[in-house]
Image (cartoon, rainbow, N blue to C red):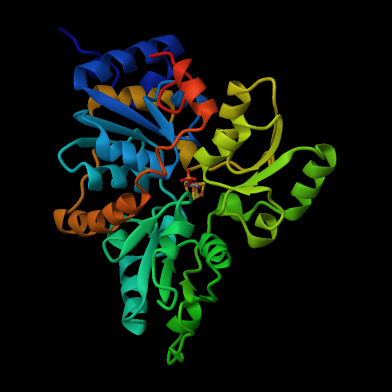
Length: 364
Ligand code: 13P
Ligand code: SF4
């Protein structure tokens, strides 16, 4: 018997197939492989609609740790698939396109972090999950946008913290916890004075190009047009914007808040906003910027997803020595996060019952 994978060799072959056929193939193949599709909130709607679980980085990592599927297909960016592999080493983790990387994660390498650790040997290292496995392996604990403040707060107030790689999230956590903040580059300079006030956050200079590009003028325009709308902004945005927000939240937190208001202005990537507009057509859901698109998240398409399942590619492989050390930092975060990632609002419960909640799109 000729198998589909023999006939359709490349994702381009799949891109020529009708949408319904791609969806049917994905469903069939998923059953054959006992696979689960995890999708980030920024994925294209076509991918969101076939995902078994949609969520933010915290929810996705909890799901990756808990699933009993044999294969995890990760529709997101590379560090998210790595997180799934770290937490589920015996499972096959697949990505539809290996080019889906996160530029913020690439701001810091394990080598450069080791150097800062040597200069500041008493500091704890808190690493945003938007980082490589090798960087996580050098860290004491991970955090996500949903729990960064709680993770930072879990350290004694006089403990210095190295925070990588997002300077905006570090700044937000510093403000919320009342800690001083300084840039890592001050300490990395040749011969720099390493004296630091107790409890300081030493922040790496990385950022997300999508969120760091959101600007105040866009917010004032949106607020003028929709004066009654609540403003929700992702903590990867700059401090001047966050200061104007009614809520600062992770992508899943944003979805919960949007469910509770008639009008919202949302400062994050378009994928989440497209989903919320489709889910709540009666609400006013305004993107802070129409240009806020993460090209890296969008390299995944439904055609590549179908190809990935048929060909069992691209498999994520990771050296065990790095995986084990990275797992320690991630598990510490998950232990501290227990209970908060899974909590649902009444609106979420209702959506769950109608098959539209984060755990599924209702069409499987
Ligand atoms: P969340 O964890 O809030 O979904 O954010 C992930 C991300 O990459 C934001 O740019
Ligand atoms: Fe990375 Fe920013 Fe894209 Fe999120 S939106 S994956 S942080 S580049």
